[in-house]
Image 1 (tube, rainbow, N blue to C red):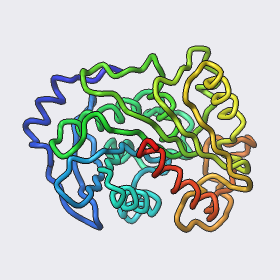
Image 2 (spheres, rainbow, N blue to C red; image 1 turned 90 degrees about the vertical axis):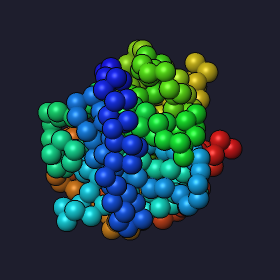
Image 3 (cartoon, rainbow, N blue to C red; image 1 turned 135 degrees about the vertical axis):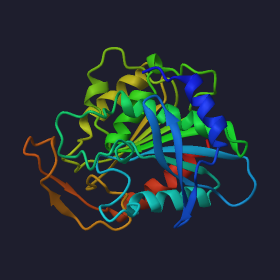
Image 4 (spheres, rainbow, N blue to C red; image 1 turned 180 degrees about the vertical axis):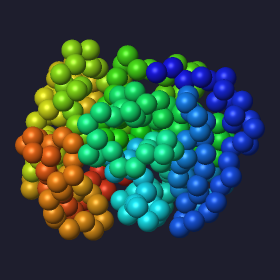
Length: 281
């Protein structure tokens, strides 16, 4: 979906980069222009003057915030962790900005992983690259679950940015749904991608991602898949008790139920891999 770049540039000038930011819990609440209106977002900024490398981070189907209005623990944990490593982290709120709650149980989505959320990622990149304290040529993309699916859609060779800003440098997808892209005869990754999944995930199973990664590597693309034995969906959550969810629209079993929960060993390894991958080493 093509962004209205003139509108975004004008809005950026008017907003002077930091749009009504309110510091809370180590992050700022900001607003950034997108193709269909402003997006609310959360910004984590490292200490110091910068300029910094940056990460656009896309939430999953549950959204960015909990029902009590607090940033969810997964997002605050990763935001703080990556900021401590020297990355500016911008998390656009694709659902709350459009007055939507959790979309996990919704079958007919109006904010789709391969369209609206890809456009949100592009708008977030553009906004970051308009800041003097961001290294414009060092912006990565990361996403969880549905946000991970958006990552895979966004890095296709046929979805190159329409603007003249530098592209994303690399991408990370936590337990995405890979079937749409693995079934696509035209899928090709234009930049390095790392996919992190659990082999016990019965919400977004690893099989389609394995097929996708192997096919991409045969074409010479850098798509790496890490599969953790015994790990479930949400394995990287700081502290999520293993439990069954029964409120989801789609699952591998077709029952609308799936197991979720933290896997400490997988989480620890994923944290290490993410830091290394984002730093390009």
